[in-house]
Amino acid sequence: MKAPAWSARMTVLRRGDSISSAAFTAVKEASSVGRDRAFARQASFFSMHPFFTFPLLLIGVLTIGSPSAVLIASGCSISSVNVVFADTNKSTLDSFYSLPEVSAHMDMVMASNLDRYVKDGTGTLSCVDARSDDPVIGTPGGDLAEFAMGLYVYNGLTNKVQSYNDVKALFQKFMDKHISASRPFYFHTDEGRLKQVFTAVGARLGKTVNILPHRAPIVAAEFDAWVEELVKSYAQGCGHIRIMIDSPAIYGLLNANIIQWLIRAFYEELWAADSDAKRAKLAFVVKLGSLTGRAIAIVSNAQGTCSGYSPAIPPSLGGSTLFVYTPSAAGAFRTQVMLPFFADQGASNWNSQFFGTNLDVLFTKQLTATLTYLIPANQSRLVSVGSTTIGSAVHDCTGVLGGSQVVDACGECGGTVKDSTKCKKKNSLNPLENGSVAAGIAGGILYLIGMVVLYFYCNRQKAANSHISH
Image 1 (cartoon, rainbow, N blue to C red):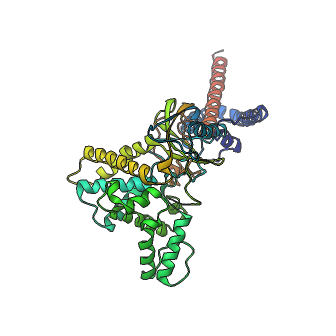
Image 2 (image 1 turned 180 degrees about the vertical axis):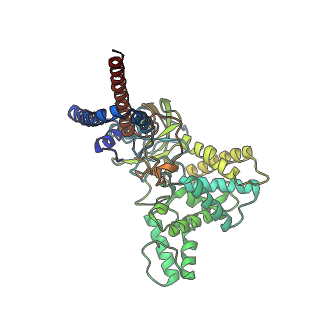
Image 3 (image 1 turned 135 degrees about the vertical axis):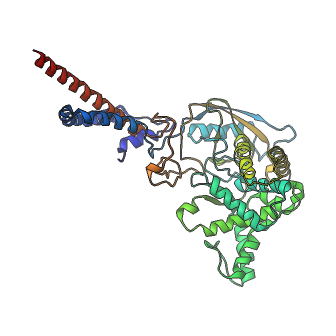
């Protein structure tokens, strides 16, 4: 049964929203009228047929625990921030930010309710790139650079990533197991770099090119031109990935083969996405304009509530631009997602401790390289933004890159289940835990009706027995 409109509205309130007393009264009156009418019709019937009362009670209990596709906004929010320098060896240039400018950026985030909390290890990892108006959880190079690191370390341990087909197979397995419409895989370029690719491909094919193909080119010469140009360093709108391809040694790599194979695998996956569901799993972003971050914000949930969640914030806001790095979320992705994934590949010489340790070492080396060589990141101050969090975490599908308002029959964000009978059972009958406030209210009303009917029936039987005894 479809939940009434008012129940859906109540469950998507965000910080700062309120329900007017008139609206709340209307909700209560609607519930009361429905309950009274139902009682008037059902009391007389069920009092004559007591064996219907117990199924009614059972339905009420089951309804309280049934899952539903209701969205509940996250209850976590930033109440204050502690903004301090995280480096000591850089001077602040006039065009770059110091602490007051970063604080002003965060003040606007809080004033505009633009922070969105995401459970560490579960959300899309965007790039630290400052060209985004949406709240992001950031790491250098985003998902693609993180997964490439995993591939390099896995290969160093097992020697099992030796060709494009090896990378493609592992990427597709990862997409199938860990990626969904509510948690898409991120990769970006930018408009300027893409136009350079158009020029190069056009020159090779002898024609004008002004758009990326939406399907893999059928003609072999065209296909080769695209995949060969798209993986070159000049084609990368992400500076972290571009320098990695140009100078793999300073990024701790023997060569750029694996990162380039992964980029090709991403584009081929994008071209093969022939449905909305498949396209929703790929967050391919083309940035506009030049890279203009003015400070590197290291964002964390430093104290307060919502432990294990990190705040996503918009890097570009009101003319202010920050590189946004969220270390807790990126670290959780490596330990909770990547490490188990590669462990499951069944390599005979697998060593989880080796993998985890070397992944951290490689990331540190690559982060240092980007902070040293990428303009303007190498001119920006590192600023720690420690958030004090209030509220409590409630399941949310919206508001951050990778969020989706599409829920399935089980109430899962970005899920694909259409038959509610196939949903996994919940561990609790709590309606809030199962995502259904409306179902909980309806179940409670049914349960109360059953109790009242049972009460009247018992009294009626008692009176009848008393009359017989006299």
